[in-house]
Length: 106
Image (cartoon, rainbow, N blue to C red; front, top):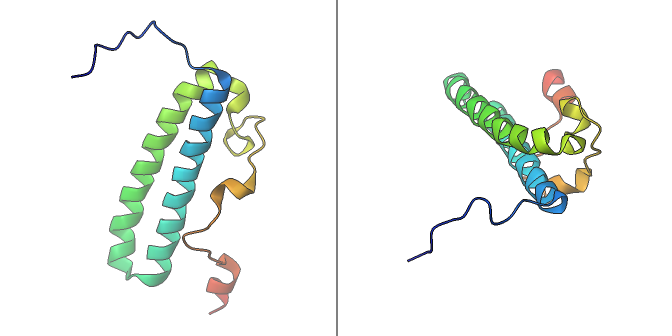
C-alpha cells in the first residue's frame, strides 16, 4: 500500500518539466505518424473514423502540455507559438515516414 501523496512535498523542476514536455511532443508526433499511416494505407471510412479519434487524442495531449507551459512558458515549442526549439531527433526512430508531395503525385 502506497502512502498518501502529499501535493506540497515537491515541486516539479524545470528539468522535470522539460522531460515531460518532450514526452508529450513525442506522443503527438507518434499520433501524427499513425494518422498518416492510416490515411495512406487504410480506406476512406477507416481514415474518417481514425482521423477524428486521433485528433481528439492529440488535443488531450496538448491540454496536458498546457499545464506545463503555463508554469514554464519557455518550454512552449515554436510550433505552438512559443520559443522552445524542438530537436527533431526526439521523434526518431519514426513509426511511419510519409511524403505528402509524393502522395499527391500518385
